[in-house]
Image 1 (cartoon, rainbow, N blue to C red):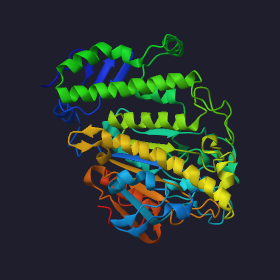
Image 2 (image 1 turned 180 degrees about the vertical axis):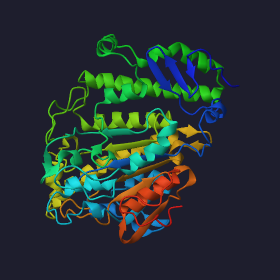
Image 3 (image 1 turned 135 degrees about the horizontal axis):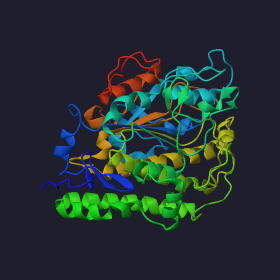
Image 4 (image 1 turned 90 degrees about the vertical axis):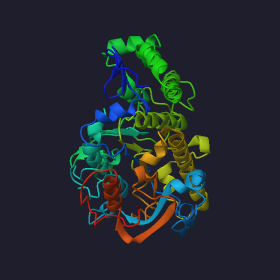
Length: 450
């Protein structure tokens, strides 16, 4: 049974629309025929590219798996990903040459972020690097979605000033670049992200009134959602109810965090910038809310391209909930001190645990016979290998998902020394249907991914 698209309630691209909301729908069997027909040109699928970045490298001895190919053993740090071993490509040997000094002296952290997705060495005086892989992909994949791309982060950035040995703060706080001199700024405020994905287009006064009355964004489309649910087959009805429940739950958690509930402390030690109002001080809550918003954005096909910075370049954030009260960057200069290395490992393990949460959610969401995780290539890594050495070779990189069959996961791949990281981005873009033979300092496609 195909539901009718009556009035303005259900838009032709799969939205529940009200006077003050436009809520994109998740994958529904009943909608798939006309939804595909509404696309301009043939539909290859809905492959998504997601890029997660962690600062300050990793504790290398605990990161690298043993063995290679499909006959490999996950390392200590990667053990939380054991349920998804067959969905992983763990990669060794990739290099971000653009992050090296090349005569420009110190500033490895800023260069590491700037070169990570661009494959370009950033200039030290001024601002210029390159267009990042996510934005190249967004120009193609974004034609099919309401948002071309989504940029998230846990720490505020600055567009002016110097943050790392003379390198511009724009490098330190931005992973995504839409032009060589123009970063695609990230959003760290959950409310802003939620409103961008689902919210009403209201003026500030109207929005303040809605928030004061604690009205849900779902109120605007509640009637149409009920009518749609009644017209759907049972399986689709369950998908819709689960999705709407997820949207409301994230909205509720955001409201709770804005009231100050669940905050570890009003002060966050180690950050260069003050967190703006509405951002949870508890990094666990902040990361989880943004992760849930990212998942909803992918599930609703609101965007097919996203970046998520789990910390700015050289982040010196503390992690009291882990018992880590020294700054992350300070600890990364461990000088082989066992206690500092143990604390770095705790921070790494926390991030990997949150990655496991994201993968688990993606694996439980179905799009027909496939999991959402099967349609995704989610990369996770850093532009620095060991924070103590500031090296940019043999980077800690992994990719989860099979990108609609373009990748063959379940392996640890070892590449020749100095293989450009940009080769990976070129390969992922190609797998998602983005044409191109060169990107950044790439030398070709990575062999063995498919």
